[in-house]
Each structure stands twice: as C-alpha cells, then as structure tokens.
Length: 207
Ligand SMILES: Nc1ncnc2c1ncn2[C@@H]1O[C@H](COP(=O)(O)OS(=O)(=O)O)[C@@H](OP(=O)(O)O)[C@H]1O
Picture 1: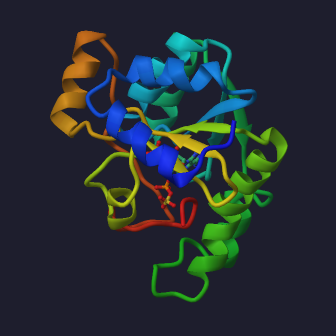
Picture 2 (picture 1 turned 180 degrees about the vertical axis):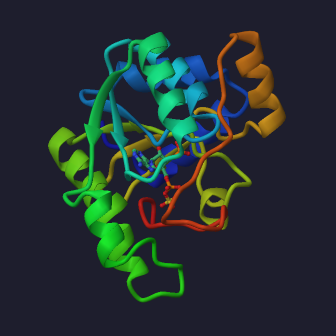
C-alpha cells in the first residue's frame, strides 16, 4: 500500500510510545515483500529480534564489507544461529585483498574514498534491493544519531517509495540496553565501518 507524506506524518504521531512489536505487526500485515537490513553493528540485535519474533522467515539482508571486526563476525554468527536468521549475504565484487593492494582504506579526504564506499557498500546494497524489491524495509535508525536521522521518524519513505520502518526510533541507548537485558540478548560494541571513520557521518544509503 502506498502512503502519502501526510498519512505518514499522522501515523508517526499515533505510533509514538507504541511498543516496537505492535508497529512491526502493523507493518507486516500490509507488506507483500518486507525485509530487514543489518550490518550487525551495536544494538542491531534489537531490530533483528523484534522483527523475527513477528515474522520468523523474513529475509535479513547483510552486506558484508569485508572489513568487519572479528567481534562483529562472531556476533553475527551468534545471532544468525540464535535467531534462526534467514540471511541474504551480499559481498563486494572485489576481494578485500585485491582492494588492499590497490587503494587500502582511503581516508575520507582522499578522492578514492567515494569509489571505496561504492565498492564495499553502495553497490552491494543496491544489488540487494534490486533483487529483493521490498515494499517495507525495517531498520534500526534512531533519533539523535545524525542530522539526517533526526529528520526522519518511525515511518519514512525512501527515495524509491519504500516504506522504511524504524520501530526503535525514539529509543536511546539506555532504553535499548534495558530492552536487551529483559530479553537476555547479546550486544557487541567493537564495530568498524570503513566508509564512515566518524560515527556521525552518512555514507549514502539513506541520502
Ligand atoms: N552493510 C550493510 N548491510 C546491510 N544493511 C546495511 C549495511 N549498512 C547499513 N545498512 C542498513 O542501512 C541503514 C543505514 O546505514 P548507514 O548508517 O550505514 O547508512 S547512511 O550512512 O545512513 O546512509 C542501517 O540502519 P541501522 O539498522 O540503523 O544500522 C542498516 O539497516
């Protein structure tokens, strides 16, 4: 179902304070092709647990840049097994070894940084979205993370008109910590995104 910006605005007002599982159930009911994306960064376990609780077989798109920390890889394996995630893995077309020999990890002021980001993140992510063609896309975007994220809400529309659903949008870290503790869910903070360097940068998936 297609929503207007006005309808989205009204729904966001209604959804404020509503438990994530209710928002997820609402979104799943009208979805033909829902998916959830993850990079297994800190707190992703919350959205993965909440969404698969409502929809156990939902596709979970993971674009592995090839530069994750050993902790992230182990955390990913743990969550995949524990939550029985239906993971759809996407990797860059080049190996990290190939790229290491040609450009390494260019800093954000290096002109090659854009090509690097395209290779390790944007192209695999586009490929995933083209193959799955979701109408509903669950993410763990939260308020207070970046200026762009502050301008979004629980529901928002992507450039392509996909309904983005971020049921934990109004949660801060302490609230998420409590959510994870109540459910005995593991978290992992040792995370590295080679396209960001700084935590409050956007790399272009949502811009
Ligand atoms: N590597 C990879 N694989 C699969 N999915 C991914 C990946 N990187 C990002 N995402 C998803 O996109 C959401 C935004 O990520 P980013 O912060 O990196 O993008 S952006 O800089 O805001 O454009 C991000 O939202 P969060 O759930 O809040 O992390 C993910 O749902």
